[in-house]
Image (cartoon, rainbow, N blue to C red):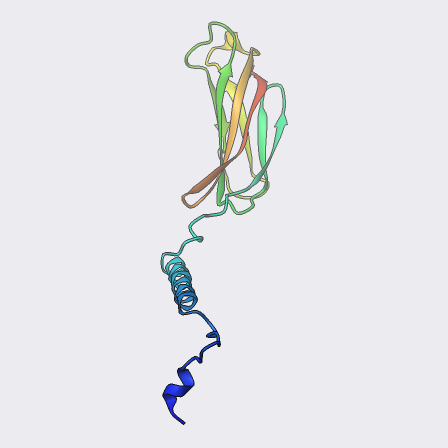
Length: 155
């Protein structure tokens, strides 16, 4: 049997696959393989990190606000900050929101926010503070609380 005869297509018979279709399929397979290899080499799809999460609970009292870490989640720590956003007219520039124990790292830790006017005459005045809790883990951080609360300055 001659090998040439095996590969010849007789008149009236169709070849199994057109050579053009074969070339297109080979090019498509090559492109798909190249894309898959590039994805592994360049580490595509793995660059997004998960959000840092934690749970906090806020207890309001007339002269202080307590923020308690209730669930540490995947955070290394939760940083509590407070700023005065509204107060009595003529408020002194020295008036500030004090945060005791602002770095919460264990479940149950508490931070206490109070207002210090520096002037006994302003004691008992009404203020509005914005309390923010930021969960941090390495270089990642997520704001887990940012709310406004009423509070009075300490007598």
